[in-house]
Length: 475
Image 1: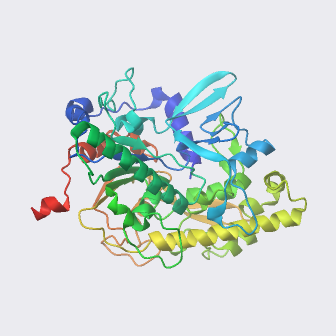
Image 2 (image 1 turned 135 degrees about the vertical axis):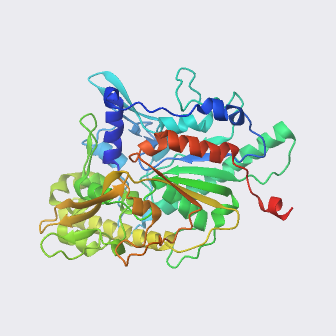
Image 3 (image 1 turned 90 degrees about the vertical axis):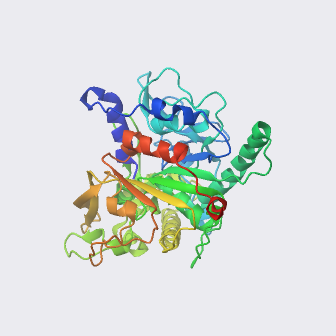
């Protein structure tokens, strides 16, 4: 789910001469005046990045675990560092109970890399953070189509950084806490600036990739923990007026499956995350496709396999169960001296994460109409061939069998949660998600948030579109 994103960013940085010049609208001319207005009539905005989109550091040593590579940064081949980037596996503990000393440390605007002493910066969420003025971001030295002057008193856009290794339901609870904190901050500003008391502050959310899944869970269930047979309450919409999801894998991604089986080989400048490291990250499992969409088949018998079936993982020794990962598993579980016992802990972990993933999918796949006056927008790519089916041979090796339109990481059908996939075709979209509006953009996964089409439309949506509140309609 991550590999191709980072490679795309790397090529974008190093090969500018090969890229076509994109002429965008004069955003400062169009939205500049609205951007400088921060009154009560406008909702504050929260920007949520996707997986790998937040920096992580060790709270004890202050070491950067994700967000930079080179001297002094994390080395995923070092036993100590492997334990830092990986979530602990404790036999008998539930997935959401797993704790370590790693904390989020801001949204990853650029990825800093040090190669032979030469610093290199690879842009990640730089464009969207700058375009929306997230966190009061100001860059006076760069002027392009994304440059908007929000003024010196800008306080209405926030970045939600989170530990992307963790469970999606866990991070939805963190989002709830974040929103409550920012609500108090905004209310204080309204009091100080406009002498307005107890304003019912509601936020607009712009979420990319996995950030959209965290958003959807929060909107549907608030901070409730994941359980079986959950009922949709739309608790989160008490605090959110609208949400725009960008390239969100609502029905999963085969890229996540490939990452779990084969690990993450980002680029020649970045180290490899082995299957054992990726295998300790619950969020990646939760990005797996649904079995009902028929994405994985046996190479020899052409029979479908369930990517969420533990028996399949055990049969093919994927991820943490791969015999080539024994040394990494030893690093991850230094307190366990017996190889067989380490393997049983790994099996227990995978089974628990897969079971929780099924519960998550059941919860967020429930058909549910949107609450009145709430808007849920989707921006998705459909111009890049994207893996839609894979085969697995008798040794467990996987390869792409078929590609269909998407953004290179997320299929168009996954973003839409198109339930016609693997089922009977119909001319009208069948989806449990009650989309208010869908916009297709001809870009790859990370290019979606850099696209002038996306930036222009999202700025109109956030800065100029009238807010339809119930009291307005009643009047």
